[in-house]
Image (cartoon, rainbow, N blue to C red; front, side, top):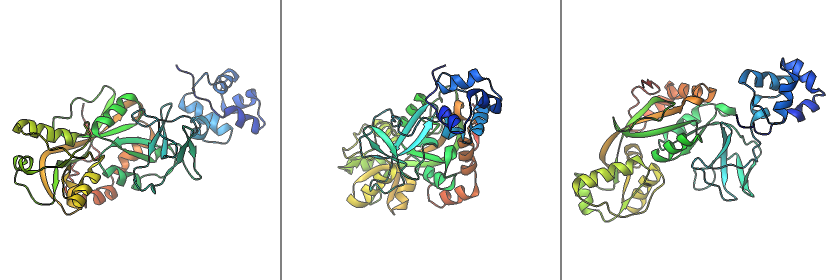
Length: 338
């Protein structure tokens, strides 16, 4: 087992006026275990961690989570420039930082990157359940779910490809991925699958097009999505089947941004149907996709995952998401048999 991250057990024990032996007796553990934990040589089991935290009057998260100013990386392992506002969470032993998605910079943040490390802001948090994906319904889930501690949802906007990669790398607790029914591919070993939604991917337009062929023949600019985006791959398949190239154009980071570019510039954009309809645009469907939540088995029993599943199964979530045209929530939250 790798060494445990530095913890605050010794400082809190001494502040409580306890010797190692006294703490061990109070927590019902051996003095040797207390010593090993304080030296960062042992990570206690959950029940032991709870007893130790209770014995010094704190929580497990406060006692054993790495310090908020420990070095953090994004879900794809990149370092983050100084001055970036981020949200923080702990996935296993790794501190993950997610730059706030709001381009104006006014979204709530936990910390700001300074000298390569996150500096916690007043009222900021350093724990949460990290879910990466491109379905904006995750934002609704975050708003309805717990707001504090390890059960709060830290949603990270990412393509399906990036979300899958982050799940494999152990930098997220779960990933929301989408693709054609039967075309999502096999989930990695040690992953549990849950149904989220169904919606169509295609092209947002200011004026309707009769077919993909008509669109590709007439369009001079097409707002694209990143290479790992399942919506981009859908258009790639359609253009390949027709033997027609996709027009060049800027790359939008998410569905909403792509649709907004259509509304503001008139250029066609690869997106999903709810984003186009929300802005009063025409939409040319290309593929019907299923959206699944892939949860790492190692985190499946954690309270944050249970809270997320409770949220997406709730009437409050269903009513708010279903109010947006283009969503089919049949079976939302149901586990999919392996």
